[in-house]
Structures are given as structure tokens and as C-alpha cells.
Length: 139
Length: 139
DNA sequence: GAATACTTGACTATTTTAGTCGGGTATATA
DNA sequence: TATATACCCGACTAAAATAGTCAAGTATTC
Image (cartoon, rainbow over all chains, first blue to last red; front, side):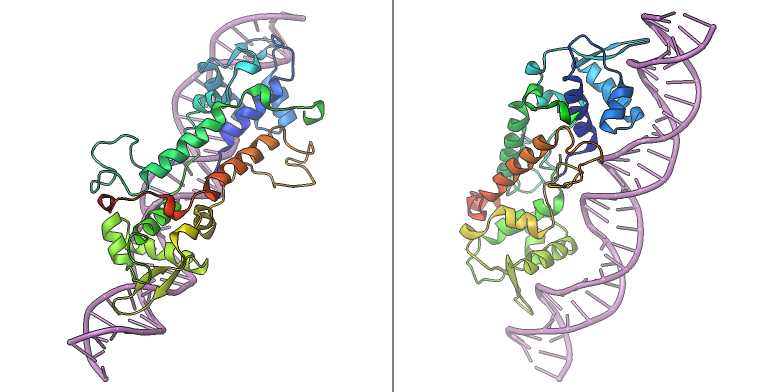
């Protein structure tokens, strides 16, 4: 079980942004420098965050990205979803009627993995961007 | 976040075994057929389970593998550890004094990922092999 | 009009995963 | 004691996913 960099960077970048006054555009270049994340990679990530209504963009000089909502209203689960990062514990479909491997109705440990998936999603569902207790020193 | 087949198969195979009387060797061939898992792959997995004292082997005709302990005393966390399947949420070391990226003491979301890691490990720590409620139909 | 900063699709190297292969060794039973 | 069964183990490999880079833009402000 491993978390990938894309979603990790996304949360890092948004946490970085949330330190600044809302409506104050933060450029990816600055985030890149502060958090040591490749600028080009950040661009990829922010396209998706924008498509999913988590940030909005401000073009031109002194432009950048702005959080579209208050950090209190941004759940981590949304960020993960934006990056297509689902928690996947099973190969088989969640509610497959046909059975997982074509043999038994459900594979022997199916319930367990479902339970785990719900458990993990629950973590992200209950965490808001504002919950990341940041001190100035962190940035 | 994805669970890999190795640990999934390990739990499936052990769950399968736990259906049979203890001390009755179960051959990998049988598990392979019942659970539709490649025999050669199972062999790889069981070498590790054996090294970690979860099963013991009985060689020769009518041999197979036997659970070394009661399913009530086998935690899922042990199975994952046996397969080197740690839950990894961060690239940086857990208690690195030097800092994660050589910049700040800890990367901005470090605490969060640590928390997630503990949260997930907790799930496995509290599940026993015997908790997988199996009915005859499952096998 | 020059500089800044977002936009987008395509490309690529590296790593990880999910196995397979080949050649063993040990043991039970006929 | 021959033979079949079943574990043992290191090395190999195809395919997929990951973690980026690259090139060629467009929009906005100063």
C-alpha cells in the first residue's frame, strides 16, 4: 500500500496555498520553490484540481492559483478524487453479481477488502485542508 | 493507494487453509485450484510466510502447509509484514532529523501521512485471521 | 511588447508488479 | 527402493504504473 506522489504533492501544494490570504494568487513557481516540487509536475496536478473546482486560476503577471473555497470546506477525499486516486483493495468489482474470479459468488476475502476500503476512505472524508495544523515554520 | 496481489493472495490462501482441521497439511496445489491463484506464485508467497513463522511445511507425499498457530492468534498485520508489505505514505523517513527534503525540518504534510499510516496499520493490527467470517460456500 | 504565468497534449525513463522458469531437495507409500 | 508428490529457491521477464519532462502554446498585466 503506497501513496503516490501526485496526491501527496497536491495536498502539500494546497496546504502551502492555504497559508496565504484567500484571493491572493499563489504562483506555481513559488510553490515549486518552497516545496521542492517540479514546476512542470505541479502544472499537471493543478489542471486537475482546477477541473474539479478546488482551485481557480488567475492568468498573467502576478497571477497564480487561488483556493475556490475556504480550507474548512475542502475535504481531502475531494483532492484525491480530483487526481483519480481511488483507494483500491480488490481486483474484482465491488458489487459484481457474477463473482470475482468466475468461481465462487465472491472471493473468500472480499468483505474484508471492502471494509478496508471504506475504512481508509473514511479517513480522507473526515479530514479537511484546514485540519493540517501548519505553523509558519513549515513553509 | 492500492493493495497488491501478493498480500491479497496471502490472506486468501491462509483463509482457505484455516477452514481445514489444524495439523492437516493443505497443499498449495489445492489452494491454487480452489482460489485460482498461480501455483508458482503461491510458492513464492509461502516461502515468506514460513520464514515468518506463520505456517510450517510438511514435505513429501500428502504434505503441504499447516498453520503454525490458531487463526485467532494470527493478526493480518503479521501477514503483511511477512510479505514486506508496509504501508508507506511518505517518501521521507519517519523520524528523520535532517528533514524530508533538506529544507524544512519536516515537510508540510508530514504529520498527516504519519497519522494515516498509523490509522491503516491499526486496521490490520486489530484483525485476526479468524475474523474473516467464512462459510463453506466461500471455498 | 515584454514578461509572467497558466494550458495542454504528447512523450519517456525508471520502477514496480505480477508473475514464470528451471532446477533442485525431502518424504511417503507402493 | 523407485516413484510420485510437494516443498524450496534464485533468477528472469513482460507489462503496467509512476514520476516526471518537453514543446508549443494562450491570456494578462505593467
